[in-house]
Length: 318
Ligand code: GUN
Image (cartoon, rainbow, N blue to C red; front, side, top):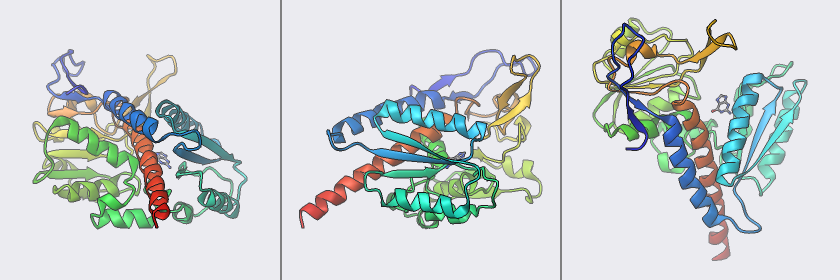
């Protein structure tokens, strides 16, 4: 398996060697992008290209970075991507009107609204994510797509990109999900809740933990497969883990580090040094789930464009 690396470098944690195999999101996402490029090459004509719009309200620095990696991946795959920016003075109505006009534009196959919204006005995020046409909702965040996923209708909905990427990374390990005990830490609409649904419909027994879960270490210790999307730096410690567990870390946290020129570094929600000595497989941060989220957005956009073309063919043959 190309995207797994035996982790043999001495760990700085207690001077011991890591035993976990590293699951590389960089390598896996590259394979996905290469596959998608071939699919796009097949469907591209002088008049047709899959197309994606990323709508941003305001100009948060972290969002700018995420969007630029989405634009770069789209260009690489052959997707026509545009970044539509609205100022941070935009009202809810203005954002809604922009979404409606993109919904109606038949040349656009995928639309995402970059979150969080950065406006001086109060904007109802639920209203915004549900305004995106379910047929173009390549983030999978609308109630329609989330509802289908929660009922196990996986082949008839857009699956949110981060959990979809996590499933792909779990697949890379060769560890089967069916019959395993999976634990998800976090219940956000973008990561934890859809991750729960995906693992469930891949036949795991799933426990979802959150801020009110008593004795989190005990719950985490029951996991054959652990997915953490809690948004808290290095919250999960290695000694909580079941020996040999598959550990997927969705966290992106900035912590102070005086040894870095920037004065900070990025860590996950899992304490990598200790966890890599107990887990069987583990994703790094950075280079784990992050690039997979972007690759899955490209995959959903290509799927949407394929559905669009198939519907055209159906109409033509009627
Ligand atoms: N902000 C951080 N991650 C995401 C994502 O996957 N989709 C959107 N729309 N916004 C995000």
